[in-house]
Image (tube, rainbow, N blue to C red; front, side, top):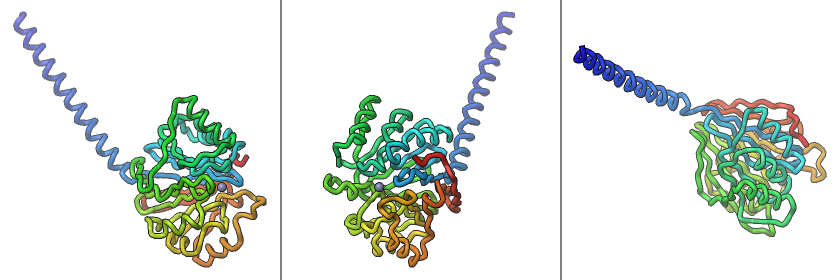
Length: 293
Ligand SMILES: [Zn+2]
């Protein structure tokens, strides 16, 4: 009797081992097929309507990134928008340069979301907006990093490359982080408020893309003909406020884009512009949101 029990125990142990091995094997198979289906995945790029300011959300199945956060009053509206999308954290947040229309809402972002990495140029200023960000980072024991030209980041199959970042504190626009994003066949160039001086410096860099975030809200201090020809985008997105006092986007730039057969999308006309890539096709839709402070 005792012997029999022992034998039964041994059989049970063997069955248990087989079940565990089978479960692990199945999980591995599931994981590898999941990776395969995600290989191209989907990414949506939200050029958010924040009036005369910039804010761009990049949403993937593997994480989120944010480039700029509008003016000060846009902060709470952006927080609400991101929460409504179910976003709780950002893998990468970039403040392209230290002007209020790009980093105004950043303190609200840092306070309300988990931020894995915060990047900004090595070009400080003494405005309250800028100091508020340093305080917000400090309060959560976050550190900021300065990206390096050529540095690469990834979220799944979405790849970023830093094309330029400056450090001349007397010309903050020219310190703007310029970065490229690739997802399969689709590519984007994000420019902040970069200047014609920088455009000349990066003319031979890896800047040929499908979608250009037009620099500096369509200012003629940027967007030189040589640069636009090199980038040769199919689409251009202008983040700009209706009836702004700078007369952005400038007519000369709109004409230049038109002459190059580049299709233009503007947040002052369309609201938030969402481009979704599946690695091959790029779908574009526009959306009136409550984010315009
Ligand atoms: Zn700006």
